[in-house]
Length: 184
Image (tube, rainbow, N blue to C red):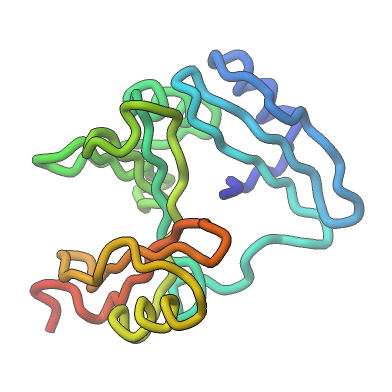
């Protein structure tokens, strides 16, 4: 997961000032862009991308494209503080769980998740959600193609969501947003 920046070196400097470390310092990937890989004080890894000829995902929030991302953290307060210090995010906490949507200009851009027993023993990790027309069919297809269904699809307030891993073990979520609980 890469977060966009217009100045990778300056964003890396802000991250270091906020207590982060550079795993991979700002590195040109000419002509595509410039990248850096950082760890926050909790050890959660985030990558930066300054576009060159490759601007990143050209599609968003449509079937087959990313539609949401969240980062789990062993210390979500530290992760939120770190990302807010370098990007200026606002926060919108979800009642009843350790989950906060990070916002820019009042719009949610990704979530920070703690707890659930997933990360207490290690570092944090990013999870990308891909929009699909049918979460049940998408998870079944992942299994047919050599992937693993990690969590069968289930209904949520945000849509019908399933978790899969590709044949190499990379985890991602699929979500049919038309199946939001309470959606008409």
